[in-house]
Every structure is written in C-alpha cells, then in structure tokens.
Image (cartoon, rainbow, N blue to C red; front, side, top):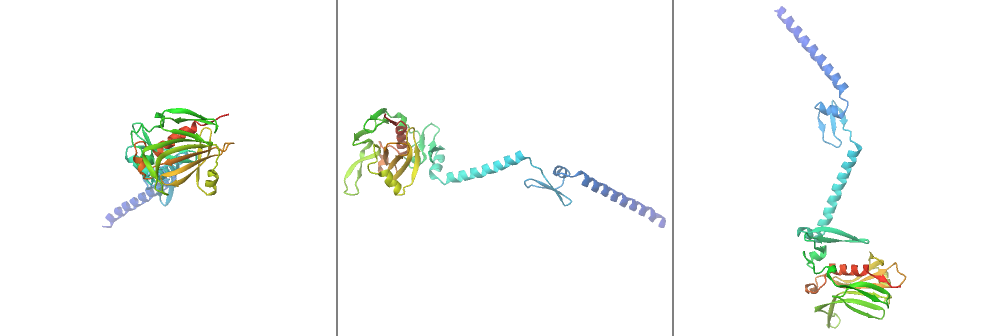
Length: 303
C-alpha cells in the first residue's frame, strides 16, 4: 500500500512545481512585454471607453496616446456641435425663421452695417424678408414687388445739391423750401386723424431729403436717448433712428460723413396689423427697404 502512495505523491509534487514555474514565467513575461496601451489591449485586458481610452492590468493603467492633430480635430468637432446646437436654439426661438423653414424656404442672414435681418429664399428664386413672409405681406413667387421691376429715372435737385435715381412710376415728387419728397399714396385707403377724426390719404412710404435739419430732429432723438443703428451707402453713412408706434413711424437718417447738414427721412406704414396691408397697391415693409436702399445707393452730391 505504501509503495502505491509514493508514486502518486511524486506525480502531484512534479505537477505543482511545473505549474508554479509556468506561472512565474508567464508573470515575468507579462511584466516584461506589456508596457503600452496597445500591448495591454492586444493581450485582451479590459479597456475603459474614456477619452483617451485606458487599459488596466494587475492594477496598472495604460493610457492611449492621442495625436495632437487628432485631438484638435476632436475639440473642433465638439465646438462645432455646441455652436450648431446654439444656432438651432436661436433659430427655433424666432417664429419667423421657423415659419420660413416650415413653408419650404431657406433662411439667409443679411448683414448690413452693425445690424442684420433674415431673408426667406424659395426654390423658384423669389424671396421675402422673413417677418414680411410671416405676417403675410410677402409670399412665395412674388415678383411684382421687386424693386428692379420699377421704372427708375434720374432726378436732380440743384437747390439741395443732390441727384439720385427713383422709381418714377410709383412716386410723386414734390420740392419746395429746401426740401424734396418722394411720395407713394394708397389709392383707396385713408387714415383717420386722432385729433379731429378727419381722414386724409395714406402714404405708405415717403422718402424726404432736407437740405438742413431745420427741425433739429437728429439732435432731438439723440438727446432723447433713442437707440440708433449704423447705416452705410455708397456716398452717405451715419446713424438711423426710429420714432413711432408699431406699424407707423419715421426713420431719421443722420449722416456723419458730410460737411453739409443734409438729413434723410422715411415715413413708413409697415405691417403692425394695419388694414392698409390689405390694399392691392400697398408696398410691403421689405419692399420699402429695397427701394430706399437703391435710392440712397444712387445718391450723389452736385459740385
């Protein structure tokens, strides 16, 4: 019986010694060979999906090395995603922008001076100022309101010392006492006076050039703290101020680059829920802006 036990114990002892030796060799091999993130991952060790990624082995952590260019691209992508999210939130907050997109338009932002405004562009080539489209003053396919379709003619005022182009087929011209006006009157709409109830023809746009600011409007609005915006045309630039109620008011264009005391005014009926917007000959707020821009960009001073 004792003779049978001895061989068995001998075999077990040999197996234990071989196992211990194999473990020692493997352990030393692992410690010697695995010295980077790539080796650790290749050996099948657990990898944490962090950025950069990390691999752990026997309590030791190997971190993946990231190329600087790759890091910069990742940071740029993250920045772009954040900015895109902010832009989308800003657009969603603007009902006119949302309305444009929901009705087949593409929103474009036009920068002018220190300000900007949105234009809704359609697949047929037509476009509307986003709020004019939102309020129903302009529609997809509108072409008759384009400033380029008017009959533009040259006008010269020696008294004021200016020349410019204007759409002669829609404006009546008056000039007297160092003042000249371009007036567009709605044919079938009259405005009731709040003072005495009398009714008078409604002018949806009046562009007025004054040789001098005789009423002191530019000084008055500045002293009153009215907020202004910068404007810039071919030969004239400065600050424009607005006074009036919603839909009815006057814009004062006060130049800053002229030696003369010229001032430009624009009276306007522009949306605001007014019934005049339903008149067939009403010029929308967006179209009024286009006309004014073209008139002032053509403005020249006589020598």
